[in-house]
Image 1: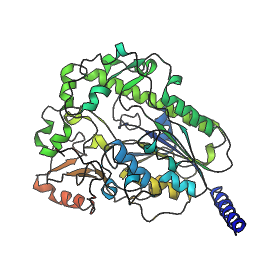
Image 2 (image 1 turned 60 degrees about the horizontal axis):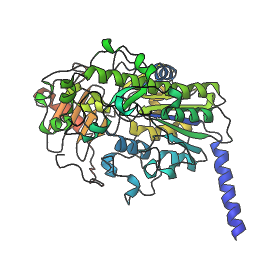
Image 3 (image 1 turned 90 degrees about the vertical axis):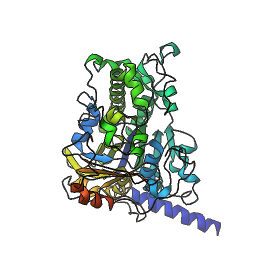
Image 4 (image 1 turned 120 degrees about the vertical axis):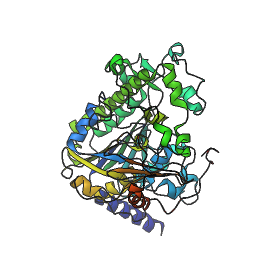
Length: 471
């Protein structure tokens, strides 16, 4: 009996491997805290991201892509499980979906590929952590790197901005909000080491298709990067983001609480331009790591049969709407790059203006690789838009921050509904900076009602720990 069982298992594995052999590889590149300050997206006029730009020139750039949540763990959990935060109750950075009794055995995106005969390899920050339990080791056949970021400069060169200890609403900033060039070359940074190992894997032939995820940590705080990337941007000429002193006057109370009180500290310090310069430098550094991976793919044996999807896990405010961070429901906190290149499928240089969600990546990759679809995911396949970026797409993107606080984004409007009844509505066609809240204008009642139909019917309870009292 044992020998028959073993034979049956071997036959199943052989059948799975034979089936997988007909499917393309997947290279997934994740970038932490990268907003729309990318050359091809035009979010900042001085952004220098030539490698992301060249990937976009080969594939389809989703210009209006949004994270499912404006912070790391809920966003990545949603993308990799295919389930919204309002479905799982994972709204914060500490709640781990495997601890939830309903999702302890949930099959994640890389797990699904592994179950279909793929080799699943993860490196850097893909789930919430690069190693340990919140890297979801069970999702991978191999975790090839847990290196992230860049080394800190010497202690005497840290926190020279003089703001340490002055942040009251985000204590994390007191230990993490710093920036500056480091002396080490890029080859000695954690992000480059992860990119280098991914590059080596992409340079080799493999006996079965692979799902390879490469997580780049910058421009996540602290903003340390090799000096060459700071030198690539002229500090004196850095353009500050759009800013309006009275921006929050028409924002409801909960929206103002989300904005916190951190940006005024930065503005008063006189270091706003220095910090913007550092963010631009770290985005360029992250782009160089992306380029190293893409170079290896294009020069190696897997170039013609590898789908590439690149995404950032959410956006980041650098003073817009008096906000400095993520943790909000405005456009700048959720909008992030999404590029899909599928050989012989995607339109070179395609641009899609439709509002889409990163939660759609899971079903999209299943369709593009020809794997069996799942009917229990919250997202929808973007494959029709990969084939034709101008196709009709009537589905708004949904963003959630804590329980029952949501933003609904379509091709023109952004509607925000807070759980205490507060509302915001912005017309991005006439007001791209979201300076005028139209929610109380009767002329837009129908727009609000239409967008409100896309608010989730389910708002799961917070799954540990509880949110702060002021939320």
